[in-house]
Length: 128
Image 1 (cartoon, rainbow, N blue to C red):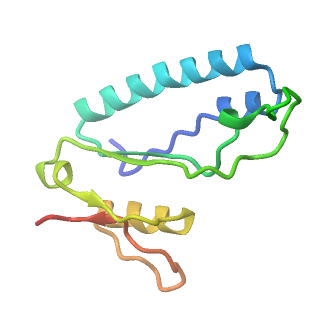
Image 2: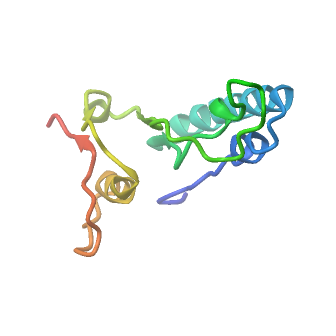
């Protein structure tokens, strides 16, 4: 049993830079399938799951004229909290969060103190 597991699916990022729409669709399908399995097994084993990203890319890999867009996207990325714990099922996430808030959120979920050098906030509004 581990206290924390991190999984990074780089498929969308790597394939997004290729500007190959067919490969992009396949990459998203594979991540969808794999993430579904990870969430299912995690919940079965008592883990809480956070799903997020650090940037977009694959959703905007082509410019409107069809030419490749090699840059990372600027669209907001989701933060999704999935848990079997009743208190977390009822929890809400604060709006307006950013990357600096991910580590404090993880620490909060783990019951660990946030070091003072971390400037972000725990995005989970616990409904206790």
